[in-house]
Length: 149
Ligand code: BTN
Image (cartoon, rainbow, N blue to C red; front, side):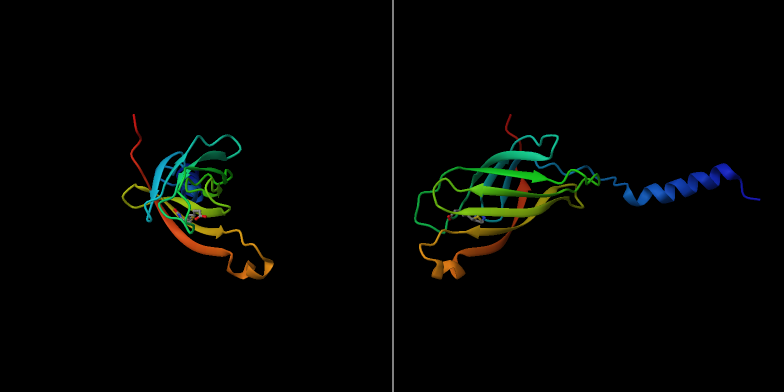
């Protein structure tokens, strides 16, 4: 007859293993650069999953001079598998536009953190008849910049 203790050990491993990730967790805090060359800095994530930071875009849909702009966001905190989903809003300091980003923080096979995002850029239009052309959509991929010490 099968021994009870080894059987229970194998059973508990089988139950726990699918939720166990050997990879390091992906952390949003820090400095990031995206595929357009834009830079962002995300501060500490608080206990509610909320964070704030700043964004320096490399490109603009306007003729205005680019300025550093604030961002506010939150990450999912019920996700204990280490690759959280998140969203943030950039309220552009130099234009009437707003961009919302949504994405997920991944750790790739080399152990490198990567943010896969999609965004909607809402530009202000003067007339409701121009609403149809007010919103751009795209993707951005962010990689971590080395921390400055
Ligand atoms: C504007 O042009 O009104 C504000 C700047 C918008 C920059 C966009 S947001 C999505 C995309 N990703 C970037 O890093 N920059 C552009």
